[in-house]
Image 1 (cartoon, rainbow, N blue to C red):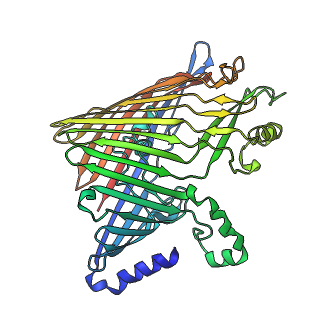
Image 2 (tube, rainbow, N blue to C red):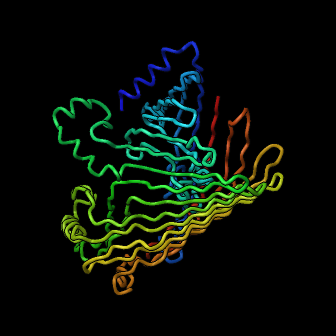
Image 3 (cartoon, rainbow, N blue to C red):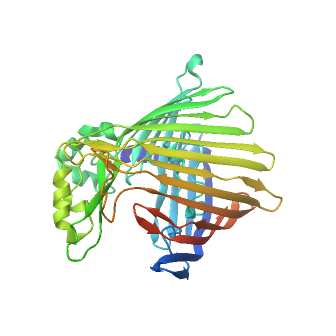
Length: 461
């Protein structure tokens, strides 16, 4: 892979006389200068007000960063390269792009390196999570249809995209990407690693879990249909919830699960009606039995070794793991300066089948509605969000942990916010707002009400 990348870069360099060089940059920052947390658990009739910047569950804003994007393209030879450097307060590195490409034919393109491709991604993002997620969590555009992205786990990959050179298929696009090949995706010393561990090549026996294959067809005047297989290495994240009784910390406990699995996705974006966009997508995760995760990496709490060993043994005994199915839809309609938009995301059908530890994971529903209006000097956006979490049931239909302090009986969250954005000098802007998440109860745990004033600035040149 590195040789391919080097050859493509060399091809761009030796033809520098016909190569177009583009350099762009940006500086952006998301901060929370003020946040107020209501804690009504202090006493029966008492409230504690906690004030400050960056407090609460949703307070981890993005600190200042500077980015430099460099592109070299030669249309005569059909080659190009791109890299994006990033400087943050915690270090310097390459962000998202370390990419080279070659277009040998007008209908065929190869990409290699570290990159992402959003041509098929969902049309509705998370409304800038640095602002409105301080009300209620919102899913991002991948919830509708996942992007092509080589570095889900920090590695590199290769991709091919083509439009069949046949008139009747001129609206069809097919793409395939492969990433995570051992040991070629190692950050350095690939040759030495392979020489000392030639058996690493056998780790690619399940390479189908690292393949992403998609097809898209544009229906003129109607919209875009796409379908894909997204390969992933299955794993299970298990978290233990206890009642934290110091004398017997493992007496009452239940588990929650986050399951990652390969999946099939399909989506359709309706774009043929002026001013209206509707994008709907669905995901069907593939069930699996085996999951590779070291026992020592499953849990963080050292004082629960006995629980750790018990759960590890229980959930390695041939259970069938089914990650939740998902359906997401987003829609927007623009009438002059007014845009009305919203989205809904539902997750359901997740399960763990086998033995007495059978679980049916809680369904979830997430709703957001955000109208916006463009004034002469600024854009005003209002966002209302609602999240519902259902019950987690055992094989007998009972709530998991019923009668215990941490029963998985679900709950809901409600929030609202408003923001004002001022755009200047091309795509540069500053955005400020206020968001409020109401107090609620989820799985028997009282969540605090939080008032947040986030601020986001982005300067591009």
